[in-house]
Image (cartoon, rainbow, N blue to C red; front, side, top):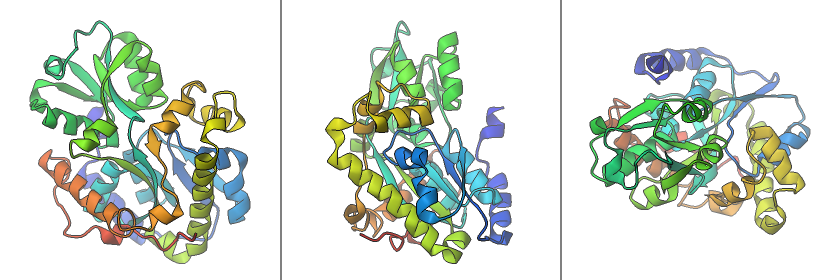
Length: 329
């Protein structure tokens, strides 16, 4: 079953062929989203994207980035949210997509939590233990980065491929000793576990992670105004959060909407929001992000994935997979 979920090169090649041959059209837009906690969930809940774009949107929820990639490649989804690791894997296999917003710079929003009573108190205690994470996700990348930093051979730790909901269930059954994951699963397992490290710390060790909104290139070329409006609604949400952070409490309307849409506990949402950075329009267009830095970071991620045997090829330049042209201040 795990092999079935893996983002195999052969399958992605088939998906790339399907995407290239698929003709984008101006019909209803389908957007793939995940359960990550971010301010743009508020306009999603309020229907602001539909009102601004002027057409119906079919919002489809996915468990992980690789699932979003598969849906985009098949033509079922035109715009999707995924992390830097599945983005690097997809771009390395020449999937024609373009990242047009860095939707989150992940810090404490993803973490490695170990079970109380598992006997894991230090990184060395991970040897022989079972740790779950969704394969080829940002959490997987962070986990591998942490193991590398600690000098632990991945063959000495049993890393298993589970989706977030499966992680929460496996944790309750006692099937796993720890997990590197995001919320709402992260919030659940933290109740009976402790954090060994998080994405912020792993980023300081040389393996930063982030999330993006991507569009199929054919759709973006035919409907640039739709992508631009989607970007504006998202960035307006980021700006609103930045201006009113203190009022986004557990019982506030924005936090309640995020909790309802993602399945997270409202009490956890303010802390989870604080666990990521949401770059504004000006920051998006700098050399640190969409004007160079993001493409470079994708390349570094791809190199690491190649070392781990997750991708076969690293491209010389990832800039064709990133664009700031859809952002207007």
